[in-house]
Image 1 (cartoon, one colour):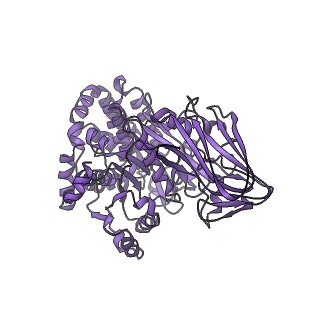
Image 2 (cartoon, rainbow, N blue to C red):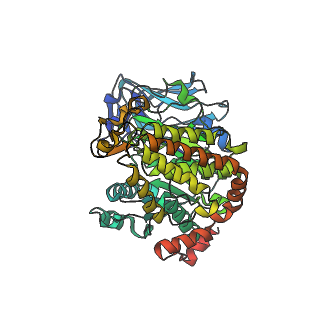
Image 3 (cartoon, rainbow, N blue to C red):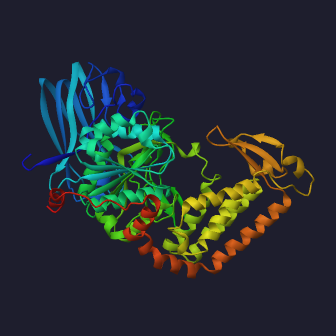
Length: 600
């Protein structure tokens, strides 16, 4: 190759002790592989191994659609005896042999295969398979290369944490053990909202010593995930050294740090500044690809998996080559902030996060960025392991307030439909469902959230710490039930009529009960659910009234939130919130040498 090329996607094998992750990296005779680090291995004689896998196949359709690159080069260093077969697929999952060559050298030889990034309008990948001959076949390294015609970027990595010191420390340890990631990281900012500081965890000091001056821990009062990630964005803008901000949840496992390098390499080549996100794998079943892409249903105003994708796909049971829908390119509206790379140019243009404390902040940001011409791409081969949705109970606990309020506010800002399309009908049905299933506290929290949305844009940038204290009242008031016309209520205040596993709660099971005890999704806590007919009727009346008020005032509220949005997401407005929460605004200190390097 004449001009310089950059490795944007390196072929890997799972690390020692992570054999359950093999389905993500390769299929075939993985038991015949002798690893020599993460990038080199030997395949025993007479065996076959396919690198047509989630981690190692090259997502050609994404590179064709979103970047200015027209060709990728597969470079391999191989030795021994056998053949290498290069394949491509289309959006329907049909596989074609591109080329095949024989390996017959005792010394590693470099082979380069140029491949066009064309013919992938709807989807498709490139990959290669190995077939060893009468003696072993060795791969001393392989990577997918593109022309080096863009400067390499740097990143500020940001983690928001709340009382998860162990998780957060382990995540920092994963970063500390990835020198190539550290080489492109200007800063690692941890925004700690918790009452159990991450600094106090026994393993933190050693990790902090490895990370050195890159690591900055900011302590502030709880402003939620939105406040934490807004702080990271603000810190990155003030420092002025990074081209990107990488947002990471504090409860993810970064089993493959290469994900960060791939996201950055892709972002460096996109045709316009683009948000690049990663997929979510199941932390409880590590071979399961839990979520592949997210969209927003513009009529129902609810999030949904991208068209044609499936949730919770086990790659141990269906490999990439054998799973047709994985070959189709999945276009998204946003990417969850478990791993999401945002160009600082986008932050400067569209602002920081919406001050919504928790829930819908990532959705709203993706929609806002897209409206300004900056799409989001959820890039295959980039992912983290996160607690799956089925193990969470965000639909019935205190988060219902923020889920309901912020969904409506996001619709007020971005919905293209009169009265938000079907969002108010959907919201009303959800509230009635809570009431019918004795989830009175959830219904109360939902109604509080909707009532606050009715207050207008002034509800945002309020003291959400005080809001959390206020939200304790509905649950406490409604938790034991109030008794109904059938006379069972007084007993039900102290003795549940039934104990129900979380997975068995159904409205037709609960409709004749005044109080039940339901196991929470985490398997540890329990929820007391109760209502009574009089309180049920009152909830229905209030639900009707608040949704009616939202419908009647929709245009007025939409105009208010849209007019206020630029100020709500501005660095100045957030700086006031940060100062109130921690006594300090984002630091402006950076050296003249750093500023000079940023201007090059």
